[in-house]
Length: 109
Image (cartoon, rainbow, N blue to C red):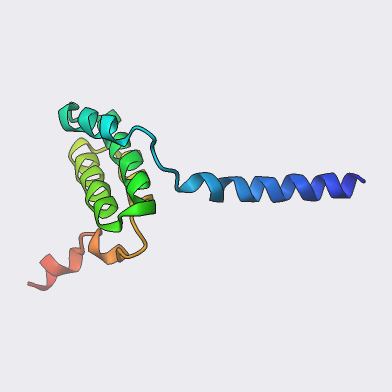
C-alpha cells in the first residue's frame, strides 16, 4: 500500500509542472494595459515573462516578441533572473543562437 501512495505522489509531482508550465492568463487585456504603462524595472521584466507564457500556448510570434522584450529589458537592468525566465519562455521555434550574442563575430571582423 505504501508503494502505491509513493508512486501516486511521484506521478503527481512530475505531472504538476507540465500542467502549470504553459498557462493562459484570464485577464490578458488588463495585463497588456499594465505592461504598456509600466515603469522599466524588474517587475516589468517578470510581467513580460508571464505574457510570453500566455502567448506561448496560442500565438508563438507574440510569445517570441514578449520574451525578447523581457530579455532586452533584463539586459538593460542587468537582471539575470529576468533574462533567464524570459529565455525559458521562448517558443520552441526560436533557436538559442538567435538570442546569444556571439563574441567571435567581433573578434573575427
